[in-house]
Length: 439
Ligand SMILES: *[C@@H]1O[C@H](CO)[C@@H](O)[C@H](O)[C@H]1NC(C)=O
Image (cartoon, rainbow, N blue to C red):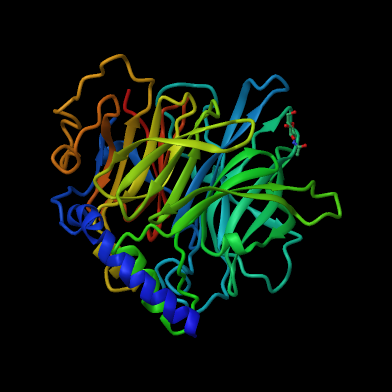
């Protein structure tokens, strides 16, 4: 009790110190913007966007990630898409509350888009959406998936799949394998537990057996008595208290402990959330939710060290998950433009919350890149005016909704072949929306 009280006191002190820096981000996300029902930058929301209907469990989806099927030389063959959803999120959310009932399990889904390798309009086909069976998953073990990442499959070999799981007693990471020969069966391998996963949120794989993992808070809602206050103080004041780790695992066949090395990659970050590895492995992007910015670090691929913070790009909302496009020329960032509504939604006191997905230009900067002042033109609520421009890192809206078109966007991913944009909604009744560029 003494230590918790001391921690609370220290937190209070730090709050005052960082109050001013925190306030900058708060201002833009406390304003209600006049969003339209739905806006899709590369087409028409009404005709080019479809919400998936996958039954009662396909809702409240947090993460989305591509599963690339490659040949032995690493050339593209086909691509699936995984979603992590939890229809029970309104009874169990260790990040935003409540902690009422951890019993009903969340779900993982595989979508196999039609039209492999084809450009142009592809009609979303919900019959290609399958719920994954979790084979061998321990009975009585909770399943509340958040961040999910899967290693590519080469020449049909199995892929390692990792899922952050906000289980009842503590947050853990589940390891599965998924094989292209029976792609709807996730075979349970083992549960990874560590004091450094206490509030794990998102993952970025660096090999089949290693990954970066973010912890969104130092203080979690699980803390007795103060669990209702400390995480909120940490968020509201954007306290730089949390961290990102890199973890390497032992082969699942060995009898060694699963985690062979743990290194701190970045310390003292306010609310680290989404994380993404650039396709060439030289950079890592990290979303700081409470600061409303994406931080870019250089990475040493040999050691996995994040060597330097090279830039921070502000976004006009609290960013959630982030993904590089396959060619590494852009980052897709999804998030929550009005945080109070999202909080009300989590507490079942609102119907919907607005959505916003942007891309950030990540192409190498040219010498003397000019500051483009007039950016994000043609968007109902442009990013311009809400965030300052960053030279060579133009922010452009891909998708936007007042919540009635699609609620509470948490991840956006773009298919490099078809151009389709998939967006998950943390509290969206249809958990995923797909928009195809009109050709
Ligand atoms: C599949 O093949 C790739 C490329 O050879 C390799 O890196 C990966 O470890 C293999 N996956 C498994 C689970 O063996």
